Image (cartoon, rainbow, N blue to C red; front, top):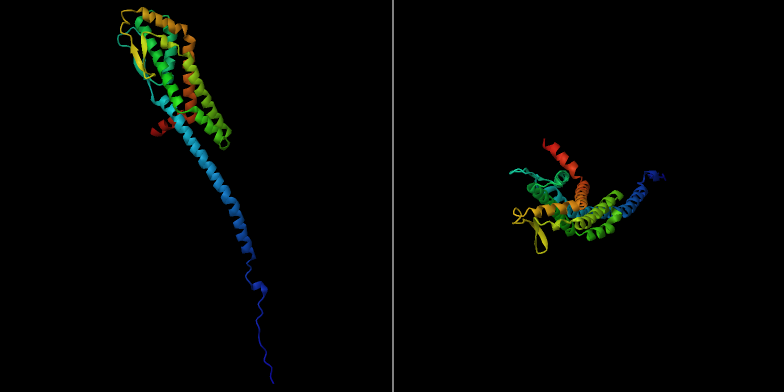
Length: 259
């Protein structure tokens, strides 16, 4: 009987699909996801918290910047002319004018010159007062607490800027309040409504009694140091607030872009 030979195909194990690398890859990706995703979420939350805190700071300090950059003061040149020069100046220019005028006219005997010098000084004091109110409104205590809370999320440079501003603002409140000795001026009185200084009023009998002006000029001369301290702290607040926002650079770039 003839034997039949059966042909059997032997499958080489080498031809089989090897799933092991893929299993290892999936396991590795799962492990990476388990580590990376929570880490990324944490970093995103830190970034969002930091960004929200920075928005909060800029919104608060922006109130001070707004006063410093949008408000201009009417300056009247101390002169005997019937039509003296009048200008609307930013606070830095205004203070520089007062410094020059005071040196030149501190011993003047001209009623008009004295009056205009006194008026400019009172306007500076009113501006410093409004700056105090604005700083009080932004709640420095709350800013300090939030800075302490989020301090670990900020760079050393950012923290130094914030704490530096807080210190300057607190100094302005104390220094400008202490050195404002010019409420004693009688020729140009301060209008106060509901305990808020709202404006200035010229004394009606001023021209009939020029001795009032002479007495007021004496008040100014006796408190020359206090005037300088008010000028310096207001300029420092303006300088450091603008620096925090990089205001001057931004303005310069805008001017270049508009050309």
